Length: 127
Length: 130
Image (tube, rainbow over all chains, first blue to last red; front, side, top):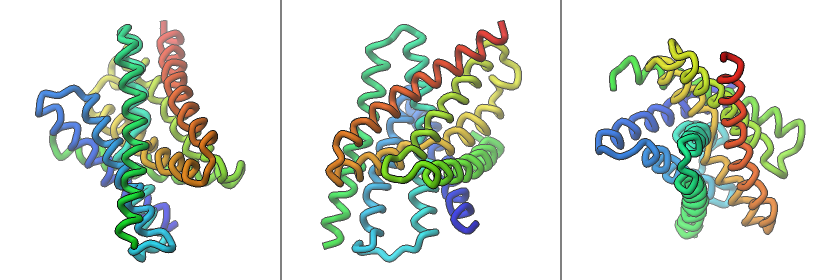
């Protein structure tokens, strides 16, 4: 029950931060694709960093609820696979197949690399 | 942006996150945690629902294309339900554990099934209403 609340509250905050990122990005005159890319890459970096920092041999001592609040909650709520998939599908529907493929592959690749960079950074901080 | 929109996103995100925790935990306990089926099923099911709703917004409009519905359901509920961060962490962990093939499989399956699920949901919503 405590874990559910931790994830729910974190996801509410993460979702709001994602929404506000979208407002800022559109205020800058950029396409919504940039907002979705930004939240996914940044959220993946943070989860990679935080997971390794709070691992059993990590530097930070955080309990299961705290880990779920940040990882399952804030990072999970901040990032979104559904909006990214819908963006890609709409590009396909518009016939812009190269951009659809480029967008999906790049966002996933950069998100994976970001999680890895976060992990490596945390390993250095743990030493 | 206004306070009402923020409240709708918070509410949707809260229940979306709880639903994700429930579904991924349930799937993990049933099928096992070695391959991240839980997150995969969360993302594919969320993609299917967003496809249906995008199809309804286009073919029927009304409430489905309204701003409040978008903030509560598209941004909050479904955005909070699906996740790229857990997907990345689990893929990274597979790769770091020497399971490169499973990591690649997870990435390819997640991307292709989610796009297919959006398309299937969208087509179902548009067809059923014509």
